[in-house]
Amino acid sequence: MQGRPARSSSVGELLSDVTSDVQLLFRQEMELAKLEIREEATKAGKAAGMFGGAGFAGYMAALFASLAAVFGLANVMDTGWAALIVTGVWALVGAVLFVMGRSRMRSVSPKPERTVQTLKEDAQWARHPTK
Picture (cartoon, rainbow, N blue to C red):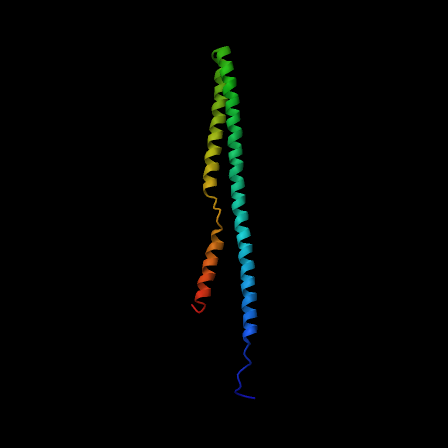
């Protein structure tokens, strides 16, 4: 028959569609959160590696400082000055690695920023779906 409107969906069908859409949205948000957490963990791992490098460099600085003191006392000048130069190089390497590790660690965010933002947008849309 002409002029007859198309069959509209029942409330149950609409509710089922909304439920499946919400489930899909939730799964996508969880995947985004996992991805963000993985990225932040990678950044934290790199920063931790730099802290480890700084620790090793600090150990080497202490080792060469000890050798420098021994050679400095035993030989007064030649070998001791050489050991102090090596110690200074290791101390500089340690300082650079520490500063780099600290700056990377400060850029690590434990909160998944993009997921939080999209959840806020989803909540805003849920409150006002026609806007």
